[in-house]
Image 1 (cartoon, rainbow, N blue to C red):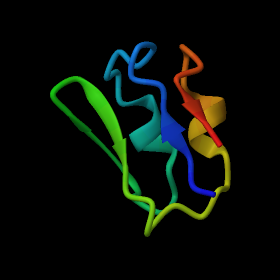
Image 2: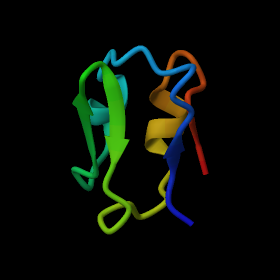
Image 3: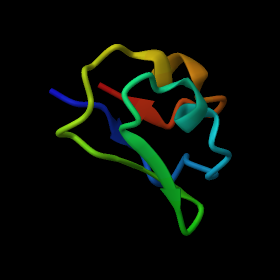
Image 4: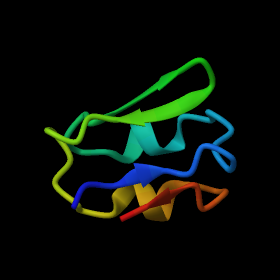
Amino acid sequence: MAASVLKALCIGCGACTQMCPYGAITVQANQARIDTAKCDECEECVFACPNGAIIL
């Protein structure tokens, strides 16, 4: 299952977008959005998020 964003915790900082090796994450309207078709479940975004807003 692909990663997902807990919208209440996401501050749109973009840390996850910089760490995703698959280009699966964008930030729109101060919220991270994950393209599940591109997500490979590597968990890099989970570790990069300073607020714990991304989960698998």
